[in-house]
Image (cartoon, protein in one colour):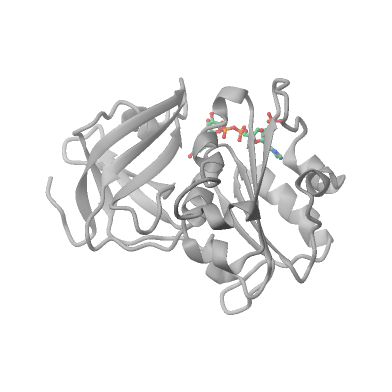
Length: 258
Ligand code: NAP
């Protein structure tokens, strides 16, 4: 197939498995493709019927300045899209809609000094892109990244996250990043064990990260499991944090993953 007004044909350049059901992949990027860190792309793979394409939304994990696009995916059992996607290899074609989407972007907020990024599973992806945006490090005093997974093996990108410290570009700001890992289904030293919702309610997350939630300072992004997003949103709304709306900046921005 060839590029159309709606999408471009790209090539998979790298596939990185993390576990049996979790993997990242890179694609070429059309020179005209633009996105704001935190947004998602719509990706297409060939469907079962001749000439058909199946489309899904995927948050972009790579930086806005990268020449490639990177995505982070789970294999959904019997999923039409991910079962095909997980079979793709380097050199295979993938379709990328020309338009980027979504509102999990820091431009939803005004002011604010602490950026909280709470992710479950592959919901980490948009935060990786946001963390590669230099403006984020310049604007905020504290960047609080929370990654909740079921098993230690699922703690993908830990090396990349730890690598901001000592990096040539981000190193001078790296002290601003605080990173909490939550592993809910097995004991792992140095990580938290309870669900992020419980840790938010009982104040342990704030204690662990050494930063208090605060209406003036905190801007909070939630991404991943829809129940986590909904439950966390409720907890925070009850504490007086407001959703950001178009033209009406608040404290919260969210993205559901399925
Ligand atoms: P997950 O079940 O979302 O769990 C990831 C982390 O989130 C775990 O630490 C989990 O804790 C926690 N969590 C789950 N529900 C929560 C809630 N209500 N409040 C607070 N924390 C919560 O795992 P996943 O590996 O990212 O995804 C699991 C399955 O979801 C996949 O196998 C796939 O079938 C499906 N999925 C579908 C899509 C799609 O596009 N259709 C995309 C992503 C995932 P616990 O261990 O306590 O549950």
